[in-house]
Length: 637
Image (cartoon, rainbow, N blue to C red):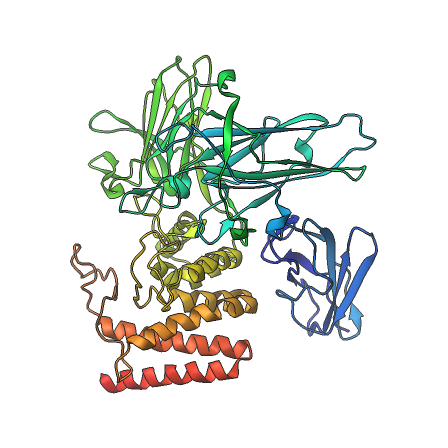
């Protein structure tokens, strides 16, 4: 009789299999798995989920279903902070498989009332042109407790970027946290397991804040502080001991602030660091100020964080025609340079970045106004590792000055990006076709840095909706983009105009008045449909359906009495190679044809999505709209 092996890769929501799913933002998380090495003819007819709560008594639920992707949570919802162990087994005909390896699911802080912390900001430190601040707090865990430290969690986010250290050790491996969302509507917080970092006695939590997307330069209009002019931290350390006590250190007015060694930081322009600066006791007591912060905006992450995903060694050191030292890393990438240098105190090392060379020199012209420069003032006295914290660059080449004797082994390129799991590969017998495919892979890695951007190097790096609308099928073949795109689509729905128009970029930092452009706005319909087709996330369709309908209704309202979308601004067939460089919208394709085609396509997508959700009336309405737009477009040709 056909039999299956035990299920593997048990996942909680869109979290990666094989590691605890900490800080879940939903009380009833969905489960996914797959069945490997099944016998020929095997078909799953049922599954059983076992959930073990803190009581230690397993609860099992059997479900007659062949589903293996995002199946519903079968037992009572989780409470905030609750941790459970989950495993599954499957049945084909009358035989059960073995049990999967257990997976850990732990809820985050599911309600604003779970936070005792408040947002705090330095009173006098960390202005727009001032050094990055470090905020500090301390808690004492009694050393004479009858038991050990059982569990410790740090829940944290910031207005800006943050890096936390507990007792002098870095917390987590995330970069550029909490990431970029539509901050006025949604602000991510992270949950860190810090059990191994906590000790009896005094525990000191220090958090470095940077400008990032919140307060740094953003968009090609040159604006700063688009979301606010003050950095702020929200942090809550909870330490549970075996006597049942939970010790809490929360940001409040008792915290202090001091300046760090980072003199300035900006995503576009880079970071300047003075390694001679150390903790100044005279600054240690500077107070913080409690500042407003809407805790109802806080959301747990859906997708993976930005991490260091690769390290590439330098491949060649060149001398430019003007005598500059240029390092070639052999690959266009996104991240920063890690440089090991020696020198005297006060020596300055400067690293400039670019994707190309022009006439043998660093080609900075495509960067427009982005400086893409990291600089360091050495502390002296030995080898120092130089790398930034609160910036990133798109580059292959780096110009290095201030290092007298530079060697290849002194340099690495640190690759940053959302830590997406690779799921698709392609190879052929043609080397150039294979290289083209690798270019697509690296383009995805570089542009999927917390949001799907258009470019990683110049003074832009925005989440253009037209780009991801076109590229989402390819991206979702190459990588597991399910949680990544789910998060971005929540921002799209939050920023959508009341009339259904979709901003050109998400998060919206251009703030146009009710923009409506075909293909760009169609990200509202195409991207959730792609995520459903690739990952089976019907719940995402349900959540996004009002947004999807809103965009199609906006398009339909712009159509004439023939059902054609004619006139008005359109990007059209953007970047047609034959269009003039200064007028990229002058493509061969008629923009009215492009607009009407997208009206028909998106109307059909909404109809299909409604059918999946069992909404027959909506499916019929938008199916009819799609049919009428298609027929009328044909008649108008």
